[in-house]
Image 1 (cartoon, rainbow, N blue to C red):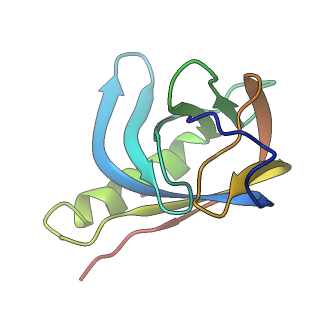
Image 2: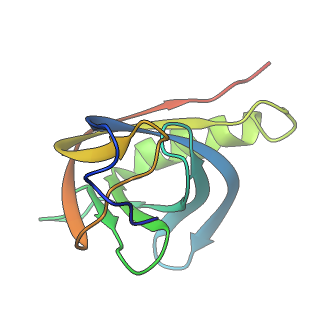
Length: 138
């Protein structure tokens, strides 16, 4: 993410990140996983990689903000049945020009200036409170 001088800008806190899904691929060996490459709707620069894995014990949905590149990493854990449902909805969207959106609510806030640039001082790992999807069908 672009580092910005915190004194010259007006900053606001956000606790919801809106993702626009650009590409989807699936990994399947022993377990099914979905990989999403995304841009942001409410943050000006950067990209996000989302990995949706099968739920295991002690796995926590998390968002990692990197300080050395304009990239966030999201790890989401769903039960197999939920992954299967999501895959089916993604398949229904494959010929649609409207993009899939992901909405991620986090427990901590991120700082964004009036231009939409994210303030990143250090790398952060933040727990995810809620995840929802908007998948256009028609």
